[in-house]
Amino acid sequence: MACKVLVLPGDGIGPEIVREALKVLRPLGDRFSFEEALVGGASIDAYGVPIKEEVLDLAKKSDAVLLGAVGGPKWEDLDYSVRPERALLALRKELGAFGNLRPAKVFSPLIDASPLKREVIEGIDLLVVRELTGGIYFGEPRGVERLPDGRERGLNTLVYHDHEVERIARLAFEVAGKRRRKVTSVDKANVLESTELWRKVVTRVHREYEGIELNHMYVDNCAMQLIREPGQFDVILTTNMFGDILSDEAAMLTGSIGMLPSASLGGGVGIFEPIHGSAPDIAGKNRANPLATILSAAMMLRYAFSMDREALAIERAVEEVLERGYRTPDIYSEGTKMVSCSEMGDRVVEALEEILSRI
Ligand code: NAD
Ligand code: IPM
Ligand code: MN
Image 1 (cartoon, rainbow, N blue to C red):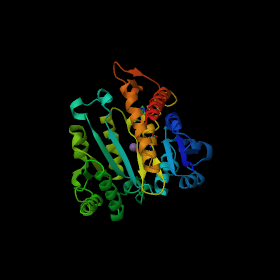
Image 2 (image 1 turned 135 degrees about the horizontal axis):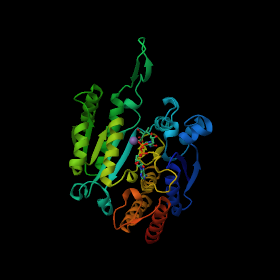
Image 3 (image 1 turned 90 degrees about the vertical axis):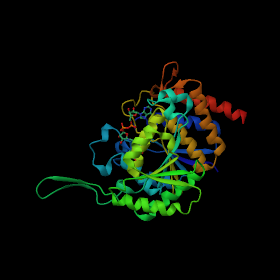
Image 4 (image 1 turned 60 degrees about the vertical axis):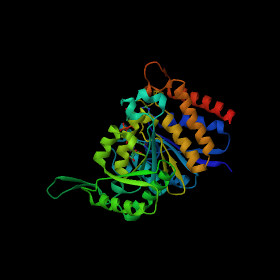
C-alpha cells in the first residue's frame, strides 16, 4: 500500500517550495500517493475558512502531512479566529502534534552564507524541541475586549499542565539519547510561574534518563548564547512561543531561514513543514529557497515512514548540491552559482538520482 501524503501548499512561496519537494520525492518511485488541498489564505479565498473540516478529516486519515506555508498581507485584517495561521494551529491541535523538532545544522559549504564568524558556527548541529499544542498559543481566556470605560484590553494566557510538560520533556530526552546526550531546557522561571512548573517537571522527568545531561537556561540568556557560543547546545527543549522565536534565530546560524525543516510529532499523523513563513516579499518570483521544504520531506521519510536510507539520501543530495556551488539568492555568496527555486529542485533531483544509483 502506498503511503498517503496530504499535501497542503498554502500561500505565498508555499506552492513554489512544495512543488520542488514533490519533485525530489518522485525518484523514490510510486511508494507515495499524494492528495492536495487548500489551506490558509487560499482556503479563505475559496471557502471563507482557513481550513475546512473535510481537510482536517483528510489529514487524520493520511499517513503524513507535507505543508508549505500560510499567511500574507491580504488576510492580515481578518479576525484572528479566521486568519490563515489558524489553519496551522488547528492542524497541530487536531493531529495531536505536540512535539516540534527543528534541527539547525550548518552545512559546511554554507559557512560563508552566515553573518556569523566561521569559528562560531563551524560544525553546529543542534535541535530545538518546541512544545507545539499548548502554552500561550492555546491558553484561555484570550481576545480583545472593550472595558466599561471604553478602553480596550488584549489578553492571552500562558498555561502549562504538568502532563504537557512531561510528554515534551520525554521526547527531548529520547531524541537527545540518539544525539550528543545533552538537553538544555529553556524557560523564564525567574518571572513566570507556568515555566517554574515547566522547570520542576523537566527536572523530575530527567531522573528517568540516566546518562543524559540536563541544564536549565533562561530564555533571554539562551537568545544571547545561541549567537555567542552555539556549540554548547545539543537539544534545546522549550515552550511553544520561545521555540518559535529561538528557532528563527537558530536558522541564521545555518545561513538562512530557508534552510530549516521541521517535523511535528506526537499524534498518529506527523506534519512536515519548513519553519519559515510564506515570504510575501519574494512570492511568485521563483527565488525562494526550497531546501527547508525538501529537508522536511526527508524528515517525513524518516519519522513517518521509517525510510532512513531514503531520508539520508535526500540530505546527502542537498549537501552535494551545496558542495557543487548552487545557491538560491538568500544563501548566495561570491564565487557561487545563483539558481532559482525550481533550478535548485532540479539540481537536488539530479544529485539524488546519482546517489540512489550508487546505493
Ligand atoms: P517569513 O518567514 O515568511 O519571511 C521572513 C523573511 O525571510 C522574508 O524576508 C522572506 O523573504 C525570507 N524567507 C523566508 N523563507 C524563505 C525562503 N524559503 N527562501 C528565501 N527567503 C525566505 O516571515 P514573515 O515575513 O514574518 O511572515 C510572512 C507571513 O508568513 C505571515 O503571514 C506569517 O504569519 C506567515 N508565517 C507562516 C508560517 C508557516 O506557515 N509555518 C511561519 C512563519 C510565518
Ligand atoms: C511557525 C509559525 C507559526 C507559529 C505561525 C504562522 C502560526 O511562525 O510555524 O513557526 O508561530 O507557530
Ligand atoms: Mn515561526
